[in-house]
Image (cartoon, rainbow, N blue to C red; front, side, top):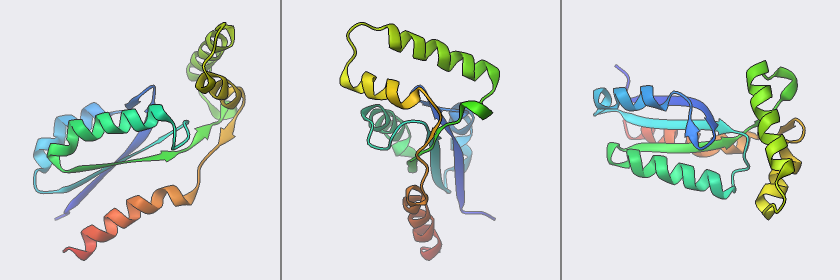
Length: 137
């Protein structure tokens, strides 16, 4: 039987897609090592990312779940129409804001076009966690 469950999804607006499914099933995996990773459009050092990860960690820590974030990006060319429309509405709202914070100004520059922040170095902590599980068996 397996000893580790890895759940991967994408992060959007401070939440992890399908995390409800994971939380609903978590009690079935009491004796398993649990790892969550998500990929999102924000840089790894974004305050919003740190806050969201802290919320997930505190919510799941008592269940011995490790949570990891990997920066990805935005690809408008491959984005479904509904998501593209949502991003356009968000972008227009941000553009029209009169007094933007520095974070909002940087975000506006970043999300105005497609970009890719992905890098293999972001999976290293996940692989190290898996290695520790393998070595402890």
